[in-house]
Image 1 (spheres, rainbow, N blue to C red):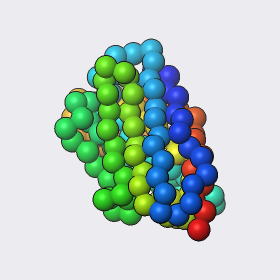
Image 2: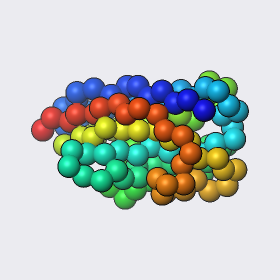
Image 3: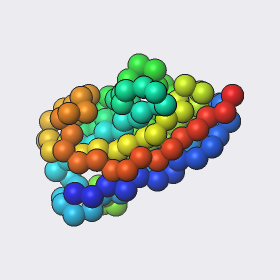
Image 4: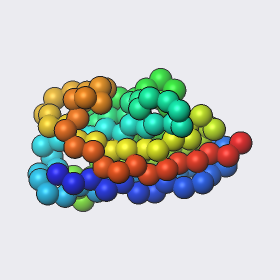
Length: 124
């Protein structure tokens, strides 16, 4: 499956952005979807994940209550709505697909397909 993320940009602290990731090539419903990020000089980290049906979501503690992951299977798209952005949210954001009908993984090595990153820069 091919993944294409978009929606990054420059935003002031406290602002919002919505990332999108469109999948093509395979049955989208067969995949749990995740968002990860890599800040400058840091390791890639888990941000959020959603199961194939959209009724199970998971967040890293630092974004819980500010970010929302959602998916539209009819559009082969997963979203990450990011509100109340902080400077520490600055990073390249990546979407990833995990072949799974169960609980999505929080570990990047469990994901089978990755898109190119979309850069989010939050100015303070």
